[in-house]
Image 1 (cartoon, helix red, strand yellow):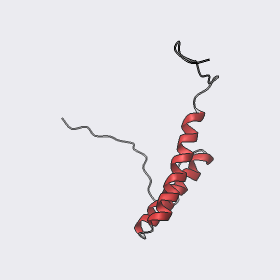
Image 2 (cartoon, helix red, strand yellow):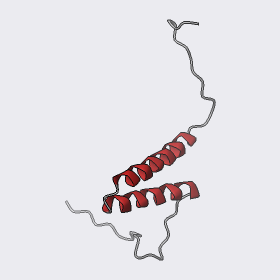
Image 3 (cartoon, one colour):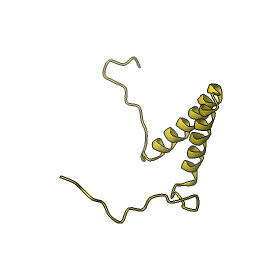
Image 4 (tube, one colour):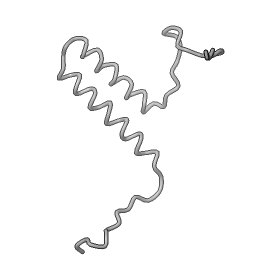
Length: 79
């Protein structure tokens, strides 16, 4: 069977905006800079920007977890 989707809002040109929090927009900038460095065959800069991109994404994902973060020792742990 074939599925047809209608009323899809896609990026048309540079005037469109991407609804991202400011923190994630910084990650997007690092990702684009990494891709540009990769195209220029500058692997050191690419790795730096990808490392920063991953750091921001991980920080954002861990900020979604709420509540106290405690470490519970196991029954065989040394006290």
